[in-house]
Image 1 (cartoon, rainbow, N blue to C red):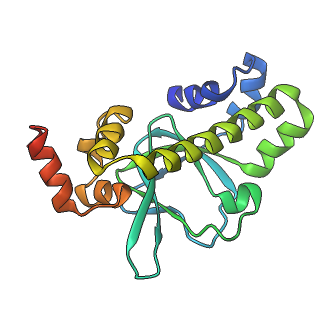
Image 2 (tube, rainbow, N blue to C red; image 1 turned 180 degrees about the horizontal axis):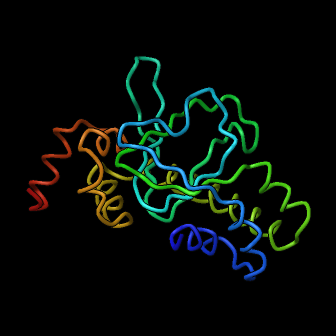
Length: 191
């Protein structure tokens, strides 16, 4: 449960009593590589704390291509925006890249904590601000960066990503072909 607690602490430092309010509700949940954690157009009622494992968020574009938009690893939180803030136009799927262990809690329970406890309301605000800031930052950086800069930034900010994420998913995230990623790796002396 170490990574789940670290994920909570990453956004706002709760008291031990505040943490205990969620720890007692956390449910162990395991899935295998290739399984779908959150299905497109089906709001998941859970907030998932990734204890060990890796996931990707993707959508299918108008041409039928899978477009990866996010990777989650140990200590990250994943959830359905459709369920959390009623954004029914978000059509993303969360799929496992590795066998993974999660702790999950119902979003309704978390929102109840927001209503009852100031510290939890602060946690929820900080959590969503962080999600928003990271999303805007990634969008802004992606507009101005070259493929090489995107790749270097991705491997710098996500340790072990090269070993944990298939080449085709890295390429999809960056918006290039797998051949381009292979060339970048050769240029950088990684192959």
